[in-house]
Image (cartoon, rainbow, N blue to C red; front, side, top):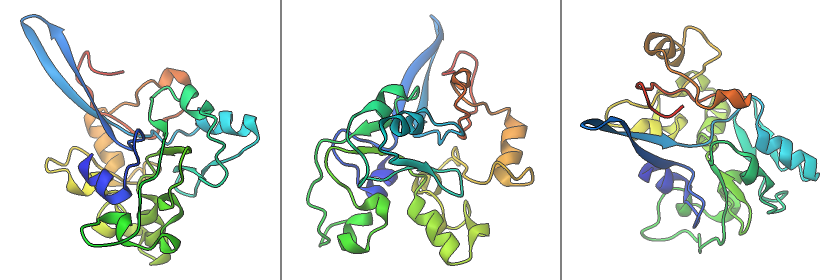
Length: 211
């Protein structure tokens, strides 16, 4: 969460990555579970359908299947927020001063005009996880798509900093990729898949955990 906030500069009330904490089991055999939540980058994103219905068409999917919001097209209606079954898209309230300067981090160190579109924040628009789209785009520009999920400059910040390697990022369409092998080996599952959204984020869940 901290890495994401630093890399992408959360605006108030619009976290891109947050923690869900809950208990499973029956007393006295009770244990606490922690799950981080971010956009599931659905194959059939309801947020996009809702946005298209409004005529704004501010939400799209790129070549990697990443769901993105165009801040310049967003109407701030909140329909996308209402239909997301995961609660991972939010309307921000304000955008603080993002001028680059001493003590700044991540996108804040770059002049606004030079930032990736996902970092050119505007007030009262929808925001969400982008899988650090600026890093994925850099991998394409540098011809280093093969290093996505491996090299820091081409991999989402949340994955790179995890000390226990609980997060793995990669190409789930490639059966030989590390992430595909991990999903197969651990029995990782999509959550709330009954909504028919086709989430592209998988979780290794314990019995009784979030589903």
